[in-house]
Length: 307
Image 1: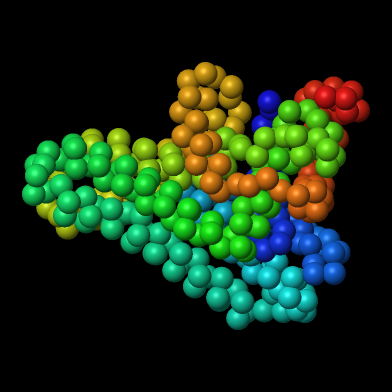
Image 2: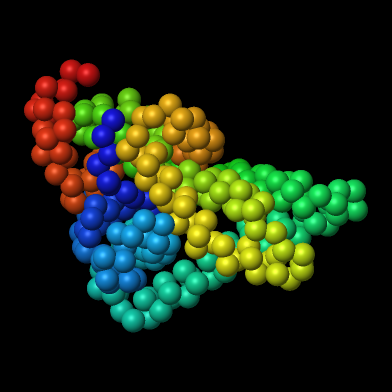
């Protein structure tokens, strides 16, 4: 396996794929046509050297992923509903995207950072006085809340289809990174789990959070909340570096620590049908020359057609 540095996400009846500064959104329209948009995204912070600094780059990449992801979701909804393509570029929709991004971050912090702290304090404080045990319990509660959240939303039909497209995205990337020509048959038999997935990133955030909070202890309940919020950029930066290492390494230790995130991906990805795989392939080919990549890393791509 060789990392291709392709990333993406599922959108409404489609997939967004990104490689370097280029991204594409491929959507299966109600009439069956696959509509593909290709564009460039340079990020919230335009100064590229800052995005190459280890541990700092993870914070900006996380923000960029959220902003681009919401833009791609909005665009896919417009295409699926047959709205005017140019309408997606007006100032009103950019403002809405900004508001939704801000609200999403605030809601995530409130639900998955602050709430577990208060719940763990409420449940354990009467019987356990140890800060260490309370912090560990809080961390596992955070992971449990995330899993319960995924299980609840996965019952929705639209989310189930989105998880299927998520699986198609992973399968395409795995197909390329294992030297197989990008065909529907090869993608279908590839794994729907990938070590660079955002789901694994969120698990690392929870796990790294437990470790850092055990090292940084404060007495005041208010300061404990402040510390948890203030540490988020640090936790995100460390988690990003671990995720990046996992994506390019087959080290047994790295694989071992990747297993929990891969296990959770069984909830956030589902097996796609061939129509979804076709959409994923179109999204990849719009921004990435997989034949050149495989020729450089595995030899002639045609040599792998029989795998």
